[in-house]
Length: 298
Image 1 (cartoon, rainbow, N blue to C red):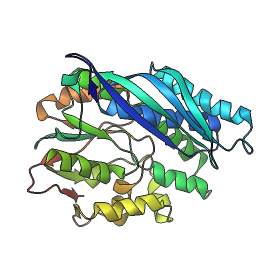
Image 2 (tube, helix red, strand yellow):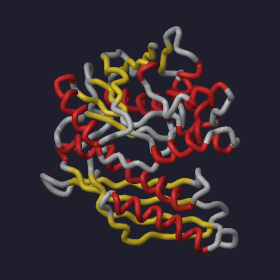
Image 3 (tube, rainbow, N blue to C red):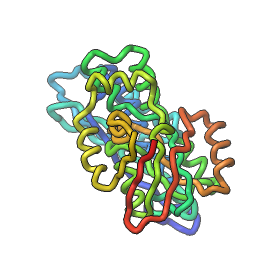
Image 4 (cartoon, one colour):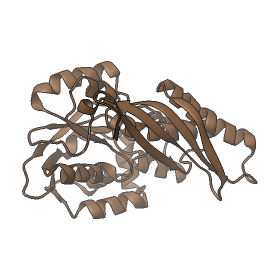
């Protein structure tokens, strides 16, 4: 974040990754939504973006590359963000994403360092994209589940800006590659607090996610996330291994995890309802803690 004056600050971010779906247009949409999410997670609104493109030119026809860029362009336009250029290189495998610039009021900025004991933890998208995409790669995820995961990943987190502008979110983060536990752990460290999570209140994309977990559809990144999170997370009995894996699942273009003070929770939930977010789950609270630690109960 770079402050311009008393009322304006720039939020700048960059993100890109390799394809996680076969459709090039949808891949472009997901990659763009993922990059834009960092601005929304800080309470800002994106205004301009630059394409970041790496493509194996000898293997991908120009039409495919154009479809990726059109998908990103469409998602940026949905966000009211202008794609003003970019840069491309040859690369052994496709990569695409955006460098995004946004605007935020300095006094409405959402950071991961402002959580306070008593704040409610609210999640705006269900978990499980890492598990579902692994199931897709293995051919065991149903078309309906795949569509549901794709729609989740290409959905914009505009509600972060909506809540920030109304002064309803005290702190927060988006939930991406380090999973819910990893990003919550970072928030707790930055804020000097602990957290209590209720595993049964954390929603999965669909009941089929639990069946995929039973079948062993767990990404390597999710397993690594859980190992890391176990260093600062305690799991009460009877939180199952499947629930632990869901909490650590590596998300692509996941939702926002927001800290809402108790007196503002009803107003925040009303904004979330009007915004038609995929979920508005109250999954726990911020607590006092001598050291940053997460406790997960059923």
